[in-house]
Length: 197
Image 1 (cartoon, rainbow, N blue to C red):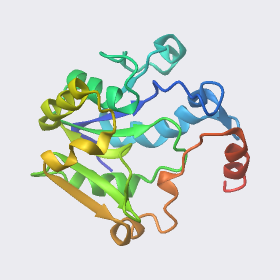
Image 2 (image 1 turned 120 degrees about the vertical axis):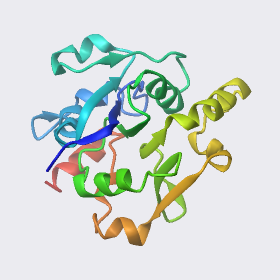
Image 3 (image 1 turned 90 degrees about the vertical axis):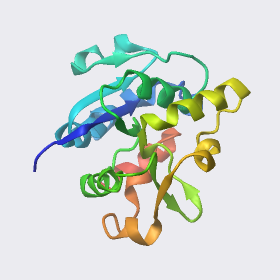
Protein backbone atom coordinates (compact mmCIF):
# COMPACT_ATOMS: atom_id res chain seq x y z
CA UNK A 1 0.00 0.00 0.00
CA UNK A 2 1.09 3.56 -0.64
CA UNK A 3 2.71 5.46 2.19
CA UNK A 4 0.65 8.21 3.79
CA UNK A 5 1.73 11.66 2.59
CA UNK A 6 1.05 14.97 4.32
CA UNK A 7 1.10 13.42 7.80
CA UNK A 8 4.25 12.80 9.84
CA UNK A 9 4.60 9.70 11.96
CA UNK A 10 5.79 10.88 15.39
CA UNK A 11 7.12 8.41 17.97
CA UNK A 12 7.35 9.73 21.52
CA UNK A 13 10.36 8.23 23.29
CA UNK A 14 11.19 10.94 25.79
CA UNK A 15 9.68 9.42 28.90
CA UNK A 16 11.66 8.80 32.03
CA UNK A 17 10.07 5.35 32.45
CA UNK A 18 9.93 5.87 36.21
CA UNK A 19 7.47 3.00 36.73
CA UNK A 20 9.51 0.61 34.59
CA UNK A 21 12.86 1.49 36.14
CA UNK A 22 14.85 1.87 32.91
CA UNK A 23 14.37 3.09 29.36
CA UNK A 24 11.49 0.88 28.25
CA UNK A 25 11.79 1.93 24.60
CA UNK A 26 14.88 -0.27 24.38
CA UNK A 27 13.48 -3.16 26.44
CA UNK A 28 13.21 -6.23 24.23
CA UNK A 29 10.07 -8.23 23.58
CA UNK A 30 11.05 -11.55 21.98
CA UNK A 31 14.45 -10.07 21.17
CA UNK A 32 13.22 -6.86 19.52
CA UNK A 33 13.33 -3.47 21.30
CA UNK A 34 9.86 -1.99 21.82
CA UNK A 35 10.65 1.11 19.79
CA UNK A 36 11.68 -1.06 16.85
CA UNK A 37 8.36 -2.92 17.08
CA UNK A 38 6.57 0.43 16.94
CA UNK A 39 8.68 1.61 14.02
CA UNK A 40 8.06 -1.68 12.24
CA UNK A 41 4.45 -0.50 11.84
CA UNK A 42 5.00 3.27 11.58
CA UNK A 43 7.84 3.36 9.02
CA UNK A 44 5.97 1.51 6.26
CA UNK A 45 2.89 3.71 6.82
CA UNK A 46 4.30 7.23 6.67
CA UNK A 47 6.56 9.01 4.18
CA UNK A 48 8.12 10.92 7.09
CA UNK A 49 8.84 9.59 10.57
CA UNK A 50 10.51 11.43 13.47
CA UNK A 51 11.34 10.56 17.07
CA UNK A 52 10.93 12.92 20.01
CA UNK A 53 13.42 12.01 22.74
CA UNK A 54 15.56 13.64 25.39
CA UNK A 55 18.22 10.95 24.97
CA UNK A 56 18.88 11.13 21.21
CA UNK A 57 22.20 9.34 21.49
CA UNK A 58 20.30 6.13 22.28
CA UNK A 59 18.40 6.20 18.98
CA UNK A 60 20.89 7.43 16.39
CA UNK A 61 21.24 3.83 15.14
CA UNK A 62 17.66 4.00 13.85
CA UNK A 63 18.61 6.57 11.21
CA UNK A 64 15.62 8.86 11.81
CA UNK A 65 15.39 12.58 12.64
CA UNK A 66 15.61 13.04 16.42
CA UNK A 67 14.32 16.05 18.35
CA UNK A 68 14.57 16.91 22.04
CA UNK A 69 11.66 18.46 23.92
CA UNK A 70 11.57 22.22 23.43
CA UNK A 71 10.35 22.50 27.03
CA UNK A 72 11.52 19.59 29.16
CA UNK A 73 9.71 18.05 32.10
CA UNK A 74 6.17 18.28 30.72
CA UNK A 75 5.67 14.58 30.03
CA UNK A 76 3.82 13.47 26.87
CA UNK A 77 2.29 16.91 26.37
CA UNK A 78 5.80 18.28 25.93
CA UNK A 79 6.48 15.64 23.29
CA UNK A 80 3.33 16.52 21.38
CA UNK A 81 4.14 20.23 21.66
CA UNK A 82 7.61 19.61 20.26
CA UNK A 83 6.40 17.31 17.51
CA UNK A 84 3.86 19.84 16.27
CA UNK A 85 6.54 22.50 16.08
CA UNK A 86 9.24 20.47 14.33
CA UNK A 87 7.28 18.20 12.01
CA UNK A 88 7.19 19.29 8.35
CA UNK A 89 3.55 18.37 7.76
CA UNK A 90 0.32 20.02 8.94
CA UNK A 91 -0.65 16.93 10.94
CA UNK A 92 1.11 14.15 12.77
CA UNK A 93 0.12 10.72 14.01
CA UNK A 94 1.59 10.54 17.51
CA UNK A 95 2.25 7.24 19.23
CA UNK A 96 4.10 6.13 22.36
CA UNK A 97 7.24 4.03 22.02
CA UNK A 98 5.98 1.19 24.23
CA UNK A 99 2.94 -0.02 22.27
CA UNK A 100 4.09 -3.25 20.60
CA UNK A 101 0.77 -4.31 19.05
CA UNK A 102 -0.02 -1.38 16.76
CA UNK A 103 -2.50 -2.03 13.97
CA UNK A 104 -1.73 -0.44 10.62
CA UNK A 105 -5.34 -0.54 9.36
CA UNK A 106 -6.59 1.24 12.48
CA UNK A 107 -3.89 3.89 12.13
CA UNK A 108 -4.82 4.44 8.47
CA UNK A 109 -8.47 4.81 9.47
CA UNK A 110 -7.63 7.40 12.14
CA UNK A 111 -5.55 9.40 9.66
CA UNK A 112 -8.28 9.20 7.00
CA UNK A 113 -10.74 10.72 9.49
CA UNK A 114 -8.53 13.80 9.94
CA UNK A 115 -10.00 16.12 7.34
CA UNK A 116 -11.63 19.10 9.08
CA UNK A 117 -10.51 18.12 12.59
CA UNK A 118 -7.66 19.26 14.83
CA UNK A 119 -7.57 15.94 16.70
CA UNK A 120 -8.67 12.39 15.87
CA UNK A 121 -8.42 10.19 18.94
CA UNK A 122 -9.73 6.77 20.03
CA UNK A 123 -12.05 6.76 23.03
CA UNK A 124 -12.43 3.43 24.83
CA UNK A 125 -14.86 3.10 27.76
CA UNK A 126 -14.86 6.88 28.06
CA UNK A 127 -11.04 7.11 28.22
CA UNK A 128 -9.15 8.83 25.40
CA UNK A 129 -6.04 7.18 23.98
CA UNK A 130 -4.14 10.44 23.61
CA UNK A 131 -0.86 8.74 22.68
CA UNK A 132 -2.37 6.96 19.69
CA UNK A 133 -3.89 9.92 17.91
CA UNK A 134 -3.72 12.41 15.07
CA UNK A 135 -2.94 16.03 15.96
CA UNK A 136 -2.92 18.99 13.61
CA UNK A 137 -0.85 22.13 13.88
CA UNK A 138 -4.05 23.96 14.78
CA UNK A 139 -3.59 22.55 18.30
CA UNK A 140 -0.36 24.42 18.96
CA UNK A 141 -1.79 27.60 20.46
CA UNK A 142 -4.13 25.65 22.76
CA UNK A 143 -1.33 23.38 23.94
CA UNK A 144 0.85 26.40 24.62
CA UNK A 145 -2.00 27.84 26.67
CA UNK A 146 -2.05 24.68 28.81
CA UNK A 147 1.70 24.81 29.31
CA UNK A 148 1.53 28.47 30.28
CA UNK A 149 -1.15 27.56 32.84
CA UNK A 150 0.92 24.73 34.32
CA UNK A 151 -1.56 22.08 33.13
CA UNK A 152 0.05 19.07 31.45
CA UNK A 153 -2.86 16.68 30.86
CA UNK A 154 -3.21 16.29 27.12
CA UNK A 155 -7.00 15.99 26.92
CA UNK A 156 -7.51 19.28 28.77
CA UNK A 157 -7.37 21.29 25.52
CA UNK A 158 -9.77 19.03 23.58
CA UNK A 159 -12.78 21.21 24.43
CA UNK A 160 -11.06 24.13 22.67
CA UNK A 161 -10.46 22.42 19.32
CA UNK A 162 -12.40 20.27 16.86
CA UNK A 163 -12.12 16.61 17.88
CA UNK A 164 -13.23 13.47 16.06
CA UNK A 165 -13.56 10.68 18.60
CA UNK A 166 -13.15 7.13 17.32
CA UNK A 167 -15.30 5.20 19.73
CA UNK A 168 -14.86 1.59 20.79
CA UNK A 169 -17.28 0.00 18.33
CA UNK A 170 -15.53 1.75 15.45
CA UNK A 171 -12.07 0.80 16.76
CA UNK A 172 -13.05 -2.85 17.12
CA UNK A 173 -13.81 -3.06 13.39
CA UNK A 174 -10.06 -2.83 12.86
CA UNK A 175 -8.69 -4.09 16.18
CA UNK A 176 -11.28 -6.44 17.74
CA UNK A 177 -9.24 -7.09 20.90
CA UNK A 178 -8.09 -3.46 21.35
CA UNK A 179 -4.48 -4.64 21.42
CA UNK A 180 -3.26 -1.39 19.84
CA UNK A 181 -3.50 0.40 23.17
CA UNK A 182 -1.61 -2.11 25.29
CA UNK A 183 1.52 -0.48 26.64
CA UNK A 184 4.29 -1.62 28.90
CA UNK A 185 4.80 0.19 32.19
CA UNK A 186 6.22 -2.57 34.41
CA UNK A 187 8.50 -5.59 33.84
CA UNK A 188 5.76 -8.04 34.80
CA UNK A 189 3.57 -6.64 32.00
CA UNK A 190 6.33 -7.45 29.50
CA UNK A 191 6.15 -11.09 30.55
CA UNK A 192 2.40 -11.13 30.00
CA UNK A 193 2.75 -9.54 26.57
CA UNK A 194 5.35 -12.11 25.56
CA UNK A 195 2.63 -14.74 25.89
CA UNK A 196 0.40 -12.86 23.43
CA UNK A 197 2.84 -13.20 20.56
